[in-house]
Structures are given as structure tokens and as C-alpha cells.
Length: 120
Image (cartoon, rainbow, N blue to C red; front, side, top):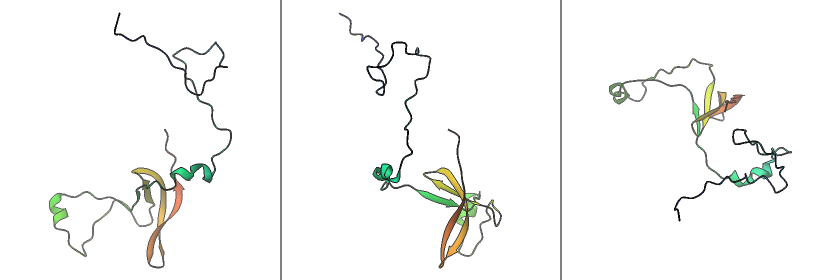
């Protein structure tokens, strides 16, 4: 008796017993069916309380550790952006939008001006 297991191929869970016998071979891609309706806010209720890290990046700067250690209150750090350029909005370190800095009742905020669509 051999300890080797025979290789088996399992059908994807979305295929039922009524699947035609002429399925494509291993080299063809099997696509799962797409939902027929758009998700509603109620469909996403389970993820509403999941925390995410949101960052608004005004700009970036590079400096040596020595320069960093010499920084004092009132010193200016030059960024790689100009006044009026959009601010990048990241969610969990992924760029999702760009916007403009706004002041609302002495609180800084961001007005989104562009949603960034990233290719998969």
C-alpha cells in the first residue's frame, strides 16, 4: 500500500450538479457569476466598524538624520509640493483620492476633488 495520495481536482463551490459535462480544461479560466444587483449600504453593514488608517499627505521631504535632529519649533521643512497642489489621501497606505485643504471653524479638513482608480 502506498502512502501517496492520488491527486484530485475539486470543482469550485459555485458549480452545481447541473453543470454541463463539457467543462473547459485546466488551462481555461473559470469565472464565478457576478451579482445581478449593486451592493447596498445594508450589504456592507458587517464592515462598518472595521478601523482603517486614513492619511492626508501634504508633501514629502528627505533629510539626513543630522538635519532631523537639529529641527526646532518654528523651523520650516520644505516639501515637494507647491501651494495649491492637491493633497494625496491614503487609506491603509493605498492612494484612493486627492483633495484640497480647507479650514472649517478653525479645524483643518480635506475636500475630495478626485477619486483615484487604480488598475488591478
